[in-house]
Length: 296
Image (cartoon, one colour):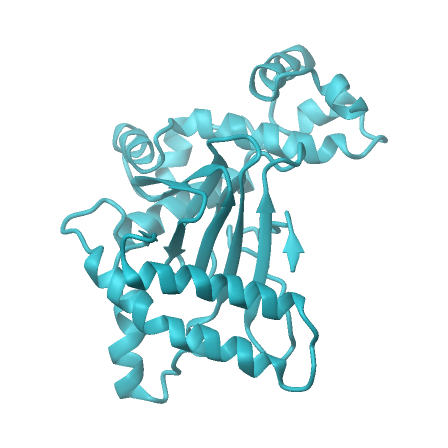
């Protein structure tokens, strides 16, 4: 099982690590008690994702909607849905099981694929939903995730992947049932909004070291500046430049791990106009100066 590891490609897609060469499945532990892992920043993946909270309480957000999940409860994230996760309580932690849609059904089997996979990929089902002990399907999904974690951590004898594959297949009817129960009409987290949001973030990530204007950002997704600002705030709960500032600070934390880089150089490389402004923003968001952070 991989702990506290998120690698994101230039297009914001997660670069996943599989637990076996024979199976498109990843099993992760995210533990926010680690100082250097304060959030899971915005990203997406082709995989479906099934999670349970093991400690504390977290907030995760998809395009236009926030969800709060406490210990013992879980959540599902649809394929290609952009999302962000942060702790509500500082020592929160959760397990994730990620797997490709092809693990459930392949397109060659048209009837089965259309019945159990296509509704998710077409945008007809929600980008995410919660599950807990209030529904028998939620209880079963929670137990399934724990069994998958145990299998992934146990002895890897010949054919162990079949046990894991079987657990995921057996969980799919419950996932399909809960997803259909969670459908709400006219939600802002539809596939068009999700695609527009990921394109906006992709542009910001590609140009975070530059001086950006709202007009430039808006033009990258074909909106006027005013509508672009409203859209981004509606989808994420923050303004574009709040998001850009936090992303720049996140990147600066990565650069601070390299002792050969001077603070002034890091400030310049992450789009800040001066070292003093960088230090001020860093202290406000992280709680200490870049120099103190580097020495911890």
